[in-house]
Image (cartoon, rainbow, N blue to C red; front, side, top):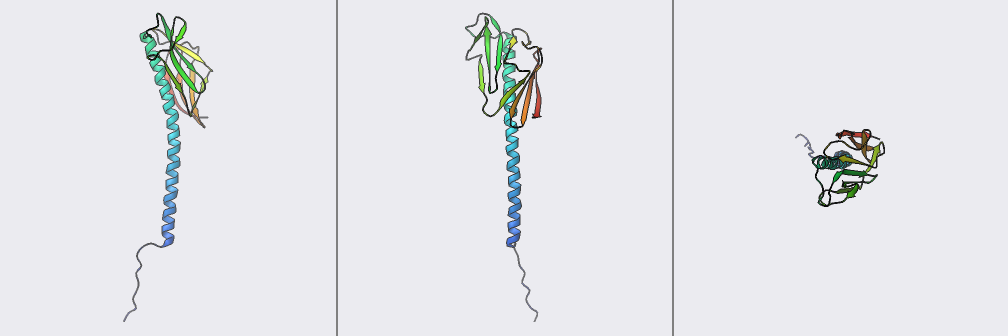
Length: 165
């Protein structure tokens, strides 16, 4: 009679530990990658929202949309600082804040850097022109990444994309 050979089926403890370790490493890599992706998308979204508000102000100025309390529209003024920006109508030489024509956005996790430093500019009425002397670049910054939007004196508003700082 021949001796019985035992066949083992299944995995050893060492094989299971190695498989679980590899799965955990893969999971950590995916989570880290998603976190970085999410941060860059937040920067981009903040910049694109800014661009949208600029285009809205430009369109309202070009078409002459004015608040009800306004007699003569001078344009739409955009004021930018490090952590917020506002868009208001300018009527008869003064800033008019109106619920239908004004915007104010405070940034929570990004900062705005402009080059050259520009505190405010005006989209002029019935033209696309802007009251700036040269192309101004606004960089939305979070950590070591930024997303840039540029505004030219002729009124062109462009996305320049991501930059590493």
